[in-house]
Length: 277
Image (cartoon, rainbow, N blue to C red):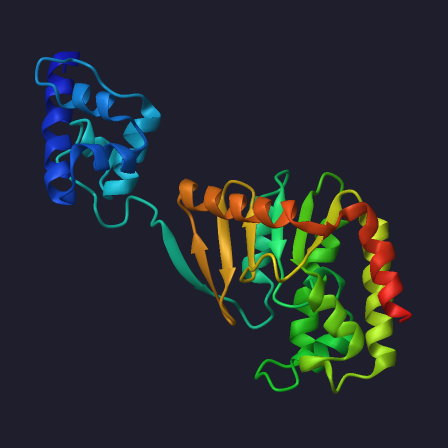
């Protein structure tokens, strides 16, 4: 099949997708990451131009068709199963290890960015985990065994993790406010000392940013390099796979970092001071 024939098949199938999506050429161009003039050229019946591979991949992913069908190699659109969905819902296993260990391993060598639900898993002590899971159906021994993984992972050479959270979460914990009102001061002090120790030990490969909760807000999530962003929903995760969605979560994290009032080189000392107040 020569280039002219390939271009003709691609143009016809692009028109099919454009009609199926039901948007303007400009909106479709924005959807697949090209400008309007490039879109017009691709639809021009006199042109033999084919787009770059990146553009073909974007069109195939956004429209849920196979790349082979798009360029005329196959008659099978491959709508089911061939393209990875842009998001998935994943349930955590009983120990909380399986998904996290898999995602950490796959993102090895990349930056991991983490907004915790309360205290970061990487620093929590056994007594705090037992307190937090007292009313949850999974017993705390399972929960504790699951949370040891991130710390072991972050002690390996070449790891790179950033944590960003509201400063008020730590202040409430230190004072025994909110859900912490029944947790003894001795345990809270031990927990803060452990957190300060880990932050000092692993800096700069582990970096904690604290921001004013009046200036920013975030749900708990983790971005695993360029691969995925996992939003914590309790006992399950909403997993974003599309590159633009992952990038959006990275940008959200960047905004939290920019408003931080406590930066990583100050974090260990700040947490230590909270423990003696």
